[in-house]
Length: 382
Image (tube, rainbow, N blue to C red; front, side, top):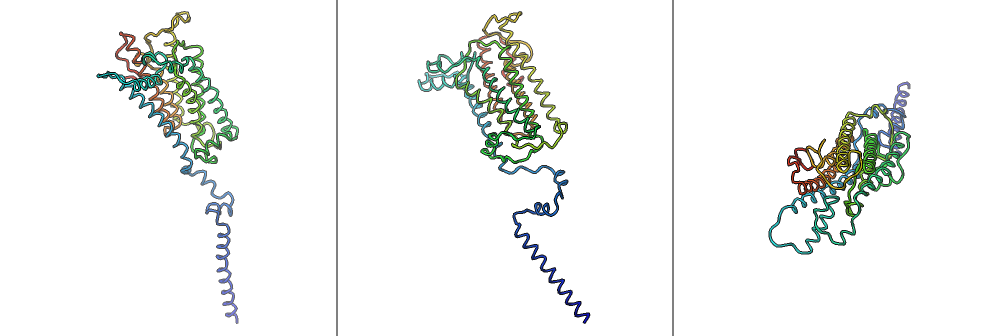
């Protein structure tokens, strides 16, 4: 009888053991939406969090990369447009034999020249029609670009600062833009993205403040003009460039690091390059302004003369070259790997190169003794 009782107990234990897997399987089926890590967290709250914190940041899903790719494509397309304009300008500068061109092609050529030239270089596009003359504005209205930039980029800087250090979120309309362009508003901060963007926005704002001050109190504008299309483009550009910086980072901010940890070596290198280029750009603008002033600082002429000193000894437009270096320094501050900002740098390269070629051409045409060793834009290269 003792042996029979032992067999019954063993069968009962086996039946209970067989029922438990079915119960667990039923429980798992009922809670199927939970993933394996979620199921473990539900059973053991807090387990494994230390390993998650120590793990490397997860790669971004494809949806989060849609917006940077879209912005990069837009800036790359704009850079290609200015590259094409530069190449076309170089082709048009070559002497052409044969008969004159038709009125239609002449009008298109005149319109192109009017769109790429401004200020003193407008003299190189020949006589303009009455319609083109109606579309021109004073070049001194360049000041408006920096007014817009100071207010707009200052606003974006405040928004990002509040989100970064005061624990808030970016404005809802910015989140809507992120959603429209494909970035998840709940995506996490990867690396130092928010701090890098904050630093770049700060320096972009300071750059706009300095340029505004130089337009108001340093530069001496002549009676040169710009096309209304150039004016509108400049206003949109300074809104777009700050927005591009902000769109490089997720909309939510999780401030989990100390400031000293967030500062990386490329931030220091970028800031030093930014300061160096800004100082030279300011010196070159002062040299240009002094060409029209007396020693007492009074404006005595609105004409053009050959500048000397600082980077003018190497290139005709060192202030354009310094502008390029400022944008390169911002690309460094974003960690070298930001493809979108490098597309912005390409746009600045071709945009400033186009303006530098036109200025270089103006100097050579109007000053027979102009130094022949000077390049147009980049020392020793171009």
